[in-house]
Length: 361
Image (tube, rainbow, N blue to C red):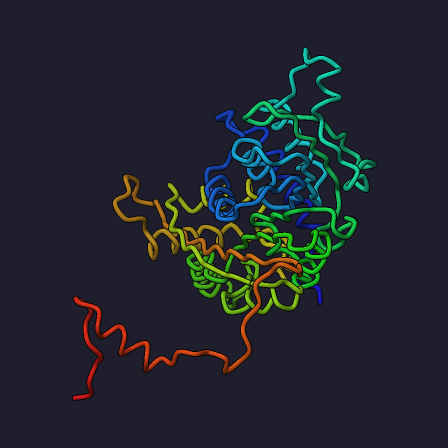
């Protein structure tokens, strides 16, 4: 089943790389991507284990690589995979600028401390050259870049300690298949960590576009791509063969000076519509103007200085799972519990200060 046009999505990411590289402010980082990446990778801090080999899939690749180099001294090899060659080049430029290894380091030091990357040498023939960077602690980290579709990973089985995908996999046509491929690239008891945009994302834009199109054109077309629902995520992890699945949700409300600024931000993040069923061609000027007016009228930003400032909802779904491993905890057999809920209620009633059980009136 093809829900998204992957070639269009790759072109969107090419455009996003260009827009961020030539941002008038000179700042190549995106606050929203940085924040979601931080929240995603914070989950690594809950695991008392070293993650030396990391696979980074599409989405906020620049923010993920930066955060790994700043906050994870245990990382030794990173492989960045993206469908867009321009985005990979953009990520490499930023990494080299911020974390480029000291060119004055002696060859002996390089030989002694550069990590081995033989487990991921399948990426050595990538179009963009690999390089060695220094993390915040001064240790060397080898980074590879590879242009591949996230749905067709070339990684060898059992090569990575963790697979990270921040805001990328919601564009996969075969999401269970992409997650299964990620699981297959993990070592036994390896961690899969992902964040995707959920179905409540851009709900204001969906409504405004529908109202505007109905008024100006007499019908409604798909202007926002379909996204996964919270209830789907646990099943997706299970279908992909993950163990100990966990799902949690963040809902963020972001203010923009105008609907036009919102669209510009979506373009710079490569989050514009790539559905196969999307209406071809550009939006009519009258429809776009009506949609902006509807948006500003129906969803004004609270306490905003500008009259046309608007709010936008982003729902982020976080998924965590583990590849099968021998040391993982297993659930007990059904019916093996030694303490009933009724007994638990009796014991809790003995604790001072706790309310007693409810009684029917």
